[in-house]
Every structure is written in C-alpha cells, then in structure tokens.
Length: 310
Ligand code: AMP
Ligand code: FES
Ligand code: ZN
Ligand code: ZN
Image (cartoon, rainbow, N blue to C red; front, side, top):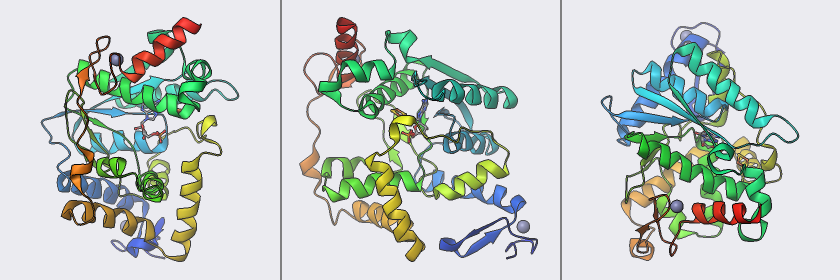
C-alpha cells in the first residue's frame, strides 16, 4: 500500500477514510485534521490559554503534542490519584507526563489528591463504598472536580481532554442503551462554560483510538501502555469491544454513529431540550464550585466523610 500524497510505502491504512499515508504525511495529517475540528466546533482560539489534562496515556500526551505543534498556548495538568497497588500505575504515568513536559520545555501542574485532601482514590473508594461504589465513580467525581478547580483558580480559558472516538462512541452507546437524555444532551466536543464550570473540549473526539496509537508511536511519545487496573471488566470496555466487532464488519460504523448523533442533536429533531433544564445551582460553601446538591458539593461531602471515618 502506498501513501496517497507521496507514493512512498504507507505506514497506516485507514479503511474508514479510504486513506493510506506514510509516517511523514501521517504526522502532518493528524494535526491538520485536529485544527479543522477545533475550528469547526469553535473550541478555542490562538489567543486563549489552554489547560490540557494529561494522564500519561497516548491520547492526552498526543493531544498536548499536537496543540503545541499547532502553535497553541497549552499547559498541562496531571492529577495524582494514588493508584499504585498491583502496578505502579500513578507513579509511572506521572513520570511520563513530567518527562514529556521537560523534554519539550512545557509547563505541567501536578496535583496529588492524597496530599491535597488526605485521601487517595483507592482510600476514598474503600471508605465510601456504600455511597459511591466502584473506584471509577469516585475517581471520575474527583477528576472532574480537580480539573475544574485548577482551570478556574489558575485562570485558564478552557480545559482540554484526550477523549478519542472510541471513548465517545462507547459513552454514547451506554447512554443510548438506557436513553439517558440528560447525559445525551451534554455529550459533545464542547461543553460551554457555565455557572463557574470551565469550558471543556475534546479535540480528538473524531479520531479512532488506533489512529491515536499510531500518532503516539510514530512521533516517539513515550506513554503508559497499561490501562488503569480498576478499569478491568468495566462496562465501558465491554461497549468498546462490542463496537469494535461492529466496526470490523462495517468500517466507519463508529464514526457514523457518533457524527450522526451530533447532527441529530444539532437539528433538535430527536431531543426535547425542556426535559433537561438543569436544577437550581448554588456555590458549595467549602470549595466554591457550583452544585445542585443541598449544602456541600458531592466531592467535598465525599472527602469529609472519608476523613471522619479514617
Ligand atoms: P479516562 O477517563 O481515563 O478515559 O481519561 C479521559 C481523559 O481524562 C484523558 O484523555 C485525560 O485528558 C484526562 N485524564 C484522565 N486521567 C487523568 C489524570 N490522572 N490527570 C489528568 N488528566 C487525566
Ligand atoms: Fe480512575 Fe481508574 S483512572 S479509577
Ligand atoms: Zn507520504
Ligand atoms: Zn465543594
């Protein structure tokens, strides 16, 4: 198979786009496409300050790399979750984020949840098992809270995450199976700033996971291969596998599923907005972030409960 642009040997063939490219042209194509998505969905401008949430994985480190190559002002934030039980997952992912930042002379903020609040994610999950369930739920809550806090306190205009098409299609699939209209209406490449919550964007949401792996490998980014140990057996992994089976038989199915959803939502044909008027929000008296729960927000309540039990 030959590269469409230069006729040299292709390094990657994307069946769904009927496109094969060599290494050099692939490393140009991904940032060009990303720039198109940033503009199409009006994510941010070259004047704005971007905070990229980096986990040490291929997607978020590639995202940081691409934004810097495109000339955007992008700093990083790494959240230390304290997941170092069977494998040194957090330790290793932090090392890789720091290495990436140092090599490229970029600014990385590091927040250690345990140092900040006295509780790591596994500790929080244990002490709140009745209220919050699996570590992933606790972790999701803590990540959302902390990313927003850092973006807001340090005055960033926008928070960018590395979610790819496989992530987004799996979430969409799950929400569609249960017709979770509240979540369906909020899912998309951009979540505008609202009530003290930073604007959130997902510039990689139209790239297949495989395309991001190829980008990271071809550009020599060192990233953590392991998944979070708690993700094993999760619903989202099962949904991803199911969609991969579909994709094998119908190349492009994932992209059509996701883009079709965005179109349907935009046209307003399928969804009734009035169902999802958000409840009244107030500022959490402890951390100041907006919340719909009475008194303290869910994050602050979780921390307080865990510290009382400890
Ligand atoms: P996940 O929820 O693990 O699929 O990650 C989705 C996105 O959230 C990643 O692409 C990152 O942008 C961000 N993220 C996940 N974990 C962390 C972390 N520990 N620190 C900072 N950002 C993270
Ligand atoms: Fe948070 Fe796995 S990354 S529980
Ligand atoms: Zn080429
Ligand atoms: Zn709070």
